[in-house]
Length: 110
Image: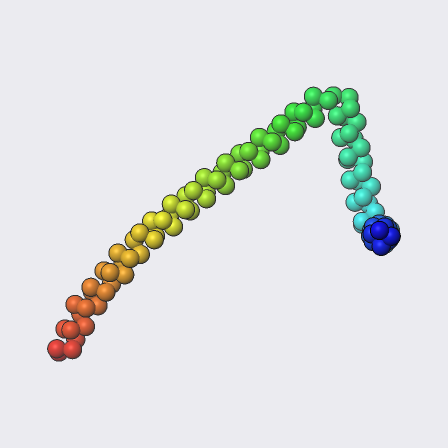
């Protein structure tokens, strides 16, 4: 049980040290500050107008649904083409074999 606590504590300390080291870079600090301001502003907007949050969540859900639907249609299309390919491949192989059989004897006779 104690080793589990050490693991979690070690992971936490490692994450904290990594965050501090990454903040030594000015560009990273500026990005963190800018992102924090953006998130803070967004949160204030949602507190003032909770319907904006629900509207945004619904829009994201609709976007995900549309994407899933498009991917589903693409997969169905690909499956259909694979099925067609499986059906036509034996026919093409048979046609090629027949063609080969007709031309090879003619070459041998010549």
